[in-house]
Image (tube, rainbow, N blue to C red):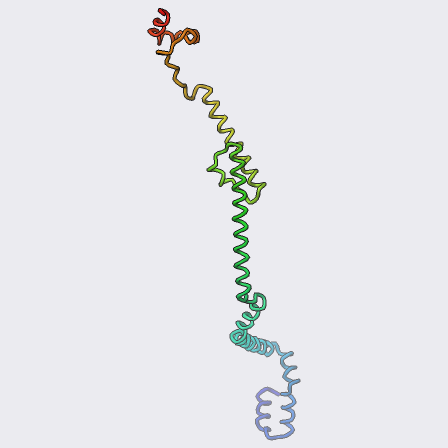
Length: 201
């Protein structure tokens, strides 16, 4: 029997109770479930329909409930602070700031004393103050080392002749026999008039 004949038979026998009972048996929940399991196209259609409805339901739920749940969770994890807590935090911050300033002042005074004792330049001391006494002392030792090597270098340059030569004493009017004995030939020549005067006496 072909499908056309089956359709025609059903149409002609709509009112027949036996045919109706048979068709209802085919359209039972168990029958539909069996049909969906056996027929791949029907199963695919049902899955896509379920996916669409699930996606739509999820979007609707997110729009209506998600933001409220997130706010609730944020409040639970990070409860709002009351005025007392805020004031306490401010006071704590101020006390910590005052302690840091006091510590800095103590370190500055110690650093100035050390720098004065070691004859280091005081304007540079502020740059060498560390987080604690140990760091500050270490920084000042570095400054002392660099400063001393710099001074030593300048002294060595001057001793080599690169530096300043002071003028020799002018012996005019203060020339004595003792000072004449200590004079070089060039100094004697330079002060020849005074030397002649001295020798005449």
